[in-house]
Image 1 (spheres, rainbow, N blue to C red):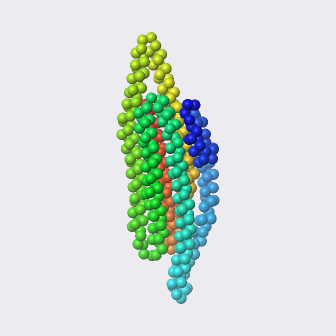
Image 2 (image 1 turned 90 degrees about the horizontal axis):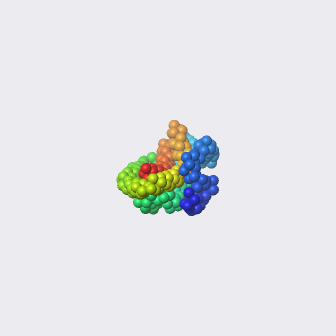
Image 3 (image 1 turned 180 degrees about the horizontal axis):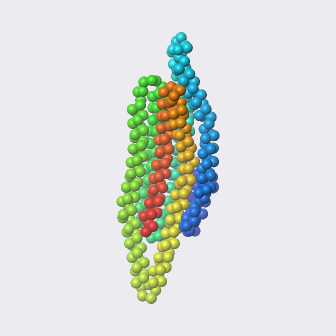
Length: 343
C-alpha cells in the first residue's frame, strides 16, 4: 500500500470534504476486511444534515406561502374591485416576485449540482492513476490500460455532455415552466415536456452505454489477464526443485496485491458517496418541499401558482436525477472494474 501515491487524491478530498476523510486509512481498512466507516455515525450525520437543510430553507418557504396566499386572496376577491384589471395586474406583480424568488432558488441549486459534478470529476481523475497502479500489481495489465483510458474518456465526455446539453436543458425547462404559468393559456407546456423528456432519456442512454461497455469489456481483458497470470504461476510450479515454492510465493504476492486493489476500490466507492451525500440531501429536500407546497396550496391558491411550484419541483428532480445518475455511473465503473479483475 505504501508504494501507491494517494497525495493528489487526498488533496482533492481535503478540498471537497474539509480534511475529515483519510483515503489511505479507508483503503487499508478495506484491504484488511474492516468496516470503512461507522454506519451509526453516518446515520447521525445524515440526520443532522437533514434538519440543518430544513432550517436553512425555512425563510424561502415562508415567502412562497405568503405570496401564494396573497395571490389567492386577489383572485378569489376580485369582485370587490370595480375594475377587475386591478386584481389581474396585482396578481401579475405577485407572480413576478415569486418568479424572481424561484429563479434565485433554482440558480442556487444549479450551482450546488455543478459543484458536486465538478468534485466527482476531479476525484475520478485523481483516483485513476492510483487505482490502476494497484490493478497492474495484480497482473491485470491489459485491463488496467483499457479501464484507465475508459475512465478518462468517461470523465471528459460527461463533462462536455452535462455542461453543453443536460444542465442547459434543465435550465430551459425551468424557465419555460415559469413563463408558461404567467397566463391562464398554457402555450409552452409541450416544449417544457420535450425538455424534460430529453434530459431523462439522455441520462438513461449514458447509463446504458457505460453498462454496455462493462458487459463487453468484462468478457475480454480480465479473462486474458487471468489466463496469463495462471500461465506464469503454473510455469513456475513446473521448475524442478523450487517450482512449488515459487508458485506459492507468486500466488501469495498476487493475492496480497488483489486485496490492496479491492481496498482502494472500496475506499473510492465510500469517498464518492460521501462527496455526494450533502448535495443530494440538499437537492432532495428542496424538491420534496416544492412538491409539498404545490399539494398544500392547490385547494386555496390559483392553479398557476401551484403549477409553477410543481414545475419547480420537477426541475429540482431533474437536477437530483442528473447528480444521482453521474454518481451511479462512477460507482458502477469502479465497482465493476474491481469485480471483473478480482477473479
